[in-house]
Length: 344
Image 1: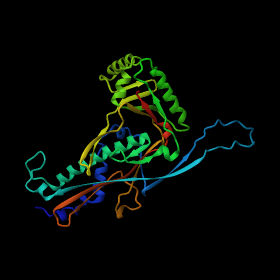
Image 2: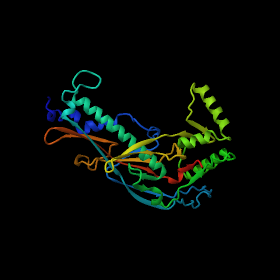
Image 3: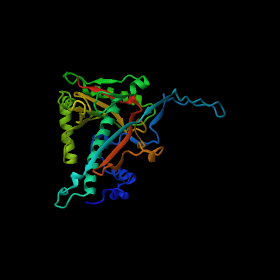
Image 4: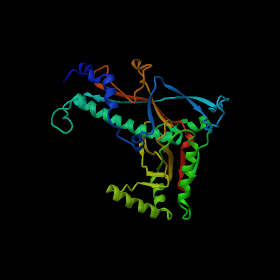
C-alpha cells in the first residue's frame, strides 16, 4: 500500500492545484448557468457593498455658447451591504475503498488519483446544481437555503420594491396573449432606465408552457414557428417559442434535498408549477454573482475563486477528507426588471 501521507504532499493535491483544476471543469448542470446571465465577480471579503442610484435620464436642452450648462441630476443614492453565503461540502476516501478494489472500467487496482478525481467531480456537480438553484432564486429576488424554506435574502424587502406580476390567464380562451406579451415587454423596457438589453427571455414551468402553446390564440402561431424552425435548422426546438418580443423557454430545473435530521428527501422545483420568470438578457450590470475567499488562513483577503478544493488526512491515517467550499452571492441588482408570470 502506498504512503498516502507522502502522496498527498504532491503539488497536484495542493489547495492551489485542486482549486485550479476544479474551476476549469465545464459547467455540468443548468440552463441558467449556461446562459452566463450572472457575471462572475471575485471579491476579497465576505460582504459586498452595492451602491444604487435611482437613475434619471433627461433630454439635454440646448444653451447659447458661453451660457450656463444644464446641471446633470444623477438621482438618489442608496447603499446596501450584503453577506456572501458559505457552502461547504466534504467527502472521504477510506482505506476500504482502495484495498483490493479494481479501478473503474478496468482490472487494475484503484488508485488514489482515480478515486480523488471521481469524488471531486461528483462534488463539483453538486455545486453546479446549487449555483443553478441560487441563480433561479436570485431571479425571483428571494434567495432560499437548500431546504427551500429558510429565507436568506429578500432583495425586494431590502429596497422597498414590490415585485411585479403579469397574469397571462391561459385558462381563458379569449385572452389576447399577444397583448399580454406587449404589456410585459414594454414594462421591462420602460424600467431599463439607462441599462441596455438585447432581448427578453422567460423561463416557464412545463404547465405554463403547455398552456401557452395550446391556447386557442397561440396554437397556430406555435405550429408555424416550429415548422419554420425545422426548415431552417433541420430540427425543431419544441420547448422554446418566441412570440412578440419574448422568447418562452420551458424550464424543468429541480433538485433533491436530504434533511439529515428527519432523514427525508424532498424535491424542489426551481420554478413553481404554472409560473414563470421574465427578464432582459444582454444587460450590463443587472445580474452579478460574487465569489469570496475560502475559509482558510492562506485565502484571507485574496480575490475569491468560484470554488475551492482541498484534502487532508485523518489523524489515524484511515481516511482522507476532501473538502470543497464556496462563498457565493447571486444578486439581482435591478429587481424592477424581472417579472413574475402566472399562467392562471
